[in-house]
Image 1 (tube, rainbow, N blue to C red):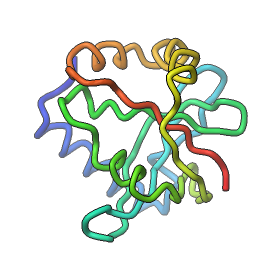
Image 2 (tube, rainbow, N blue to C red):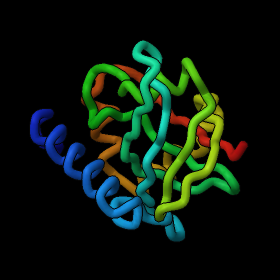
Image 3 (cartoon, helix red, strand yellow):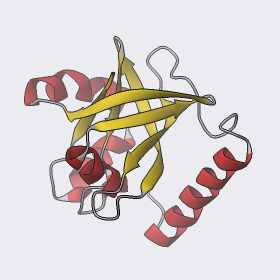
Image 4 (cartoon, rainbow, N blue to C red):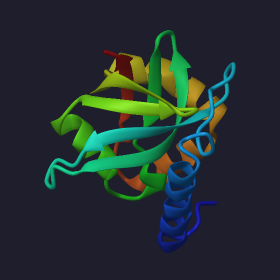
Amino acid sequence: MTPPRPILRVVWSLHRGLRRVTGGRVGTSQAKGTGLGTLFLHTIGRKSGQPRANGLFYIVDDQDLVVVASNAGFTSDPAWAMNLRAQPAADVEIAAERRPVRGREASGDEVARLWPRLVAANPDYDTYRASAGRPIPVFILEPR
């Protein structure tokens, strides 16, 4: 069950603060095997032009990282997804290492291939998909 949005905002804020205070040593983790990892995606705000950082779960697909724009099942896409559509050049931070990526929305065939792996790693994605009332975009973060 997903907590109410105000609680999620507090948790996400604490997570960002913990990462900032520890220089990225805490708050991210490498994905292992078929499990989820945690990264921070650094984008540029499409309206503000300001840097943004969002903590996301990810899986690894060959050399790419795969993230889900679930927005915890809410009815709109998360801001980071809209930022990535406007400016695909971004950075990811994992275990205090920052690296450049290019984000793109997965094609229908890619989503069909990746979705079972994503749900196996985090069953909440199916719940989010059912409650969102919108297609849940999947993004591929390719090294650049």
